[in-house]
Image 1 (tube, rainbow, N blue to C red):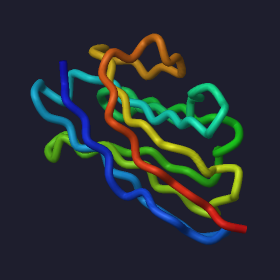
Image 2: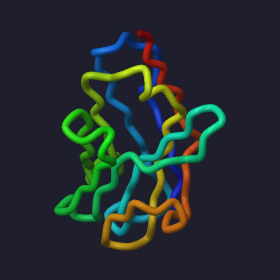
Image 3: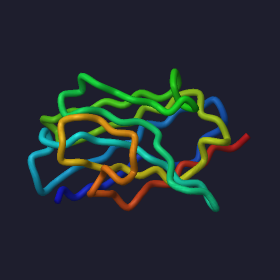
Length: 124
């Protein structure tokens, strides 16, 4: 399995921006489709965004569409989540995930490798 480490979380005011990074190691990163999920206190983990191995296909949750952008740099073994116009309801722990497949997926169960998470807090 690939090992994943997220970074870039923090505290930001509503309307602000953050860029999350997820560094992968252990396997050939380009063989993996990647995803971002989040989990707020007392809630289930939910899909945020996903990207195929080639970056040709991307998916977004309706709640973040138009505000968040997922991208990847296979040469750097890294996937990014650019988050703009953040809202208090975006507050959560954000997790990076990898699935050994070409296609992007919105399903938690499709991802075998997970990072430890990074906290994003948006104040109003």
